[in-house]
Length: 138
Image 1 (spheres, helix red, strand yellow):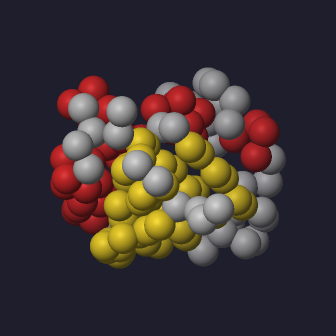
Image 2: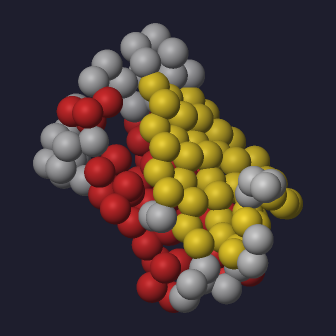
């Protein structure tokens, strides 16, 4: 049994608001190429926008890696957002609806998790944050 195969990976540095827009556009392009429905494209782009903004605002900048992913007959978009910021001290709290460490609405991580098919968060104080998301075409 082989795992998912990643193809055509592209890296987008995230260091400014313009980069957040670029990350969003990159994800949309991959979503269109993979044949995601308009609704699923919108969900994935919304999640990517939240995660890119978090990378910039809370992580002090970082990068997004985006690629097509294939698992058997399934095709989708896989995006990874990484920063070397202060990290998240309480992952469960950070994933709670309505919780915010800043002035936002508290929909970032928990909202992004609901919008994608697969969500993985890896962070620790002083170790930065890595969020991986995947949305599969239906």
